[in-house]
Length: 128
Image (cartoon, rainbow, N blue to C red):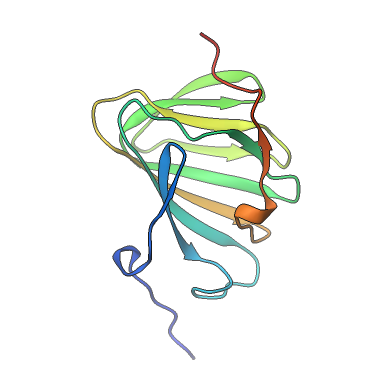
């Protein structure tokens, strides 16, 4: 058996609007067959931008630290450390850190995804 092991600090962090992202498991790292995974860090007061969807699959997120809110298809809900959210295929969503500490989130995609498979929705934002 071939051990597939990686540490998040060994992966280059991408700086994207409202977040910093590291692909943990994708075609380049670990090469899983049925899923992909990334770690996202969101600073206080920031939100993942723009809202987006995954037309080819679903996403499951788990909040590791911090607190905030999530928008899914027009519905807003609170999230905090320990919260897990299923984002159904095609659902339009975004995450915002409303707390005073960094929010850290692990995301799982099935089937495997990458930024090229995202569909962006610039017109969607949290209600005021």
